[in-house]
Length: 151
Image (cartoon, rainbow, N blue to C red; front, side, top):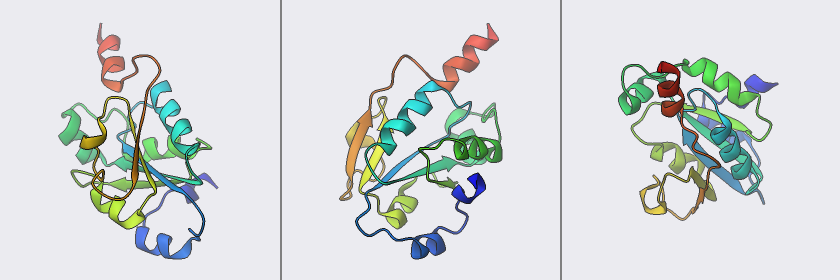
């Protein structure tokens, strides 16, 4: 069931799964107004391993990052959409400034971010995880979508 993808107790969940011989991939973001750039990132991330963990910013953390007019969609709706994407195995909400505490817990083999990042600036890049930057097709951005709809 899709709702089983959403993890509310990460420590318990991690203690209950078999990670042996599995490559864990991790990415994160706001995922506000899910668009083709997001879908491409998630598909490409999943190709790199056996399990894809996606950390999603809570509504308050999106406001801090993007301003008071965001998120457009609440956390529950954003996570519900992500559950429908077959490449996404597990979804974790997070409210911290960065996803570093979750990365420490999950201990992924690969950290994935979109092409607007540099490897050195990815939270967790100083750890032993491989960092992969995925080039995004086109010029997709939730901010640009919002701006184009205002005109």
